[in-house]
Image (tube, rainbow, N blue to C red; front, side):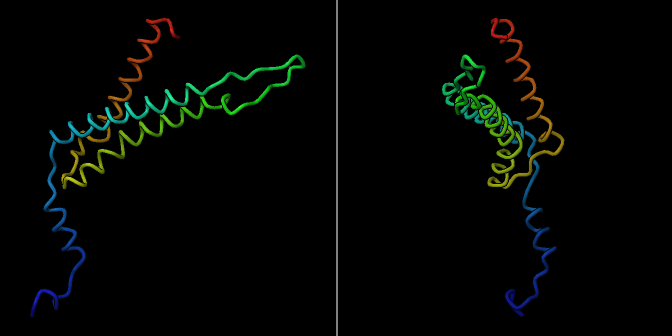
Amino acid sequence: MSEMDAPTDPKSSEQGVEASLEIDRAFTYRVIIASLIVGVILAGVAALILFSLTRPLTADEQGNVNWSIGGILFPVAAVCVGTILFWAVFGLPLRVARRRGVILDPEIYPWLGAVLLGALFFGAFVLAMLLGII
């Protein structure tokens, strides 16, 4: 009986794929940090573009607000930046690891990116306070 005639068991084929993958802690650190750097760069570019288009909402003499698309671009920029950073921390490392055939270390992967992102936000907030922006 040849291999093509033999019945295939989906569980055995999944186990073969899982057995060929390996957990790599050093790769996990590298891919999370590189993904976060990519995300910060992409989010920074998106924020600069959207923030440059913002215009404050103005009111006329009667108190009516003159609406413009530039008036709502600040919240749109915040949502775009948050989405890009979420993808960079939680989506991009998984995609890179899957293409390389490596399993991200489950003790490190989900929380390291979130902690680094929180530290980045905290540092940016403190820097903005020291520079007098806030």
